[in-house]
Length: 368
Image 1: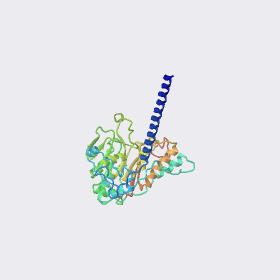
Image 2 (image 1 turned 135 degrees about the vertical axis):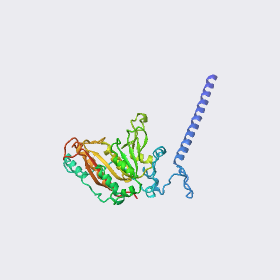
Image 3 (image 1 turned 90 degrees about the vertical axis):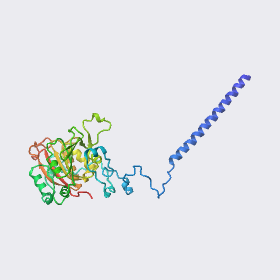
Image 4 (image 1 turned 180 degrees about the vertical axis):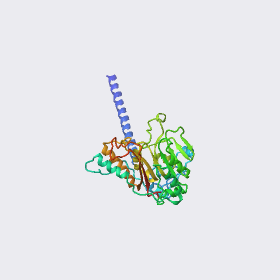
């Protein structure tokens, strides 16, 4: 009996001890939880208005002038300059104008499609509207600036489909004369670079982007050659660089890397990739940094990653070109290539060529 009584006492003491431990643990957890929630809800101590917060970007970083500027996200405002590229190419870096810092760019995610050409939504109606649009200049460049008249005569004497607009009403002629002009040429091969060499000889800073060259950056006469392919998207970071056939970047990324904010002449000859590249330039607001756009369009098929039925494809093409007009670009030049097949989406429609070279001038260039 005594032994049984002792066992009961020991068991009772053990139960009391465990109860006390559980109670202590419960109180500890409650107190810690309250302290954590209170810390999470707590507001930071406001900074003194007399001492603005220190900019962690360093003493040389450009500080925004207002709250609106702090919220701005744009390749124009926050250049991500690549020191290696700048050193290798000797490219001049543009300063950031104050008016540009204060401008807020609204991001866009898609192109607003224009209304259908007719209620029938037919390929013939869409094609006729599109072809009429690209073959009807909206402005005539017929009064060249006297200071660059010789350049104009040499340029026109070559019978080159890539025609410049050196009209005195626009600023390209003045910038060429002052040798303060920049040219970007996107395409493959160096065979058709007469325009680039002409502008380089006139004193312009010319950059040609060609993924087929061997070196990352080369200087050929007065031009810079870069082993880069301009795309409508940046490369997938999940794919190792060694597995990528060539270095591809968006034009906005290249502008950031080079520290450039203004391109006087942008020549695009991308063999059916021009539609998606043009869409990217529109959506990212790059076009307002371009003075003259020379574009070769290919109409024998829809183009890379352009989907939909045939009428929808032509409507998409037309909507892209209308976006240029909304961005203050006017068509001044249109030339069909007589050596190419007469195909429009694999058909012979309205005797149209499969290739046209278009020239657009930015009537608000340079940006203020």
